[in-house]
Image (cartoon, rainbow, N blue to C red; front, side, top):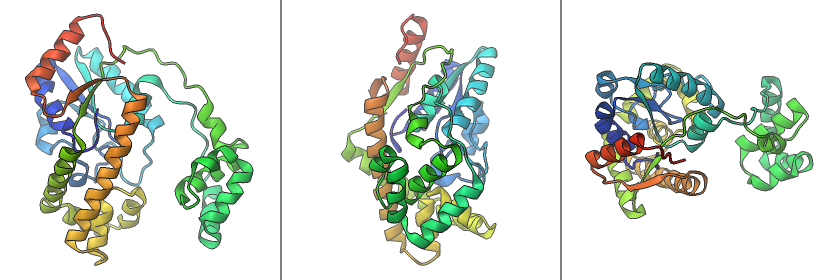
Length: 303
């Protein structure tokens, strides 16, 4: 695990074969088959060289969730173990990691008709007014959400109308227990200043290697609005560039800014939610490989 752009995928590819490992995607954007350049997933050649799982599993028109991932990852890991191999989850989505090993509380219901009605009200009345409505129905959720957070306000209102219970109640439910081997968890960490340099290098490479062209192809296929709804870093900026709403320099700067903000949120989440062996991002592959071999041969497991 680790924040975006810290070098997780490259390190995993470098040690997977020696460990007899099959790589499992643990990233909420890399599961979409249409998103290639802007997600930092392993290259097509790397994915062809050894088993990779859950990359390119969904279309961007399909809904990805931690609940879906938890079920899919459990099936994949069981199959890998049955083959006598080691499942290696790689990614930066902490909630996906938790879902894979600990399970999640029951997911609140979805109701398309209610959601459409709330979205219309959002456009007509504005998010602040719906936030006040949410404060009456679910004060706990409203206190956590900014009055301008359209997506989360709408979802919270949808849940309370569809289920009769506030979303804060759903979040308090105990996840189902899952029988699983305790995972060895390693987090790659990097100094924030050096990470910003890594982010800038990766952003430059993505735009140079065809992010805008990839985005334009999706737009030509009629998937522009679906892509926009994902709010995917880099792709939003590529769309803005294609629509002449940004210059190339502005698009790259905005991508860098949003990526750094994401990394900060991820860093905070990992610090408080994940117990892991923390390793410097520049660690030599052989050192990590040997560390994992020693851990696997002992009875100690790190959660």
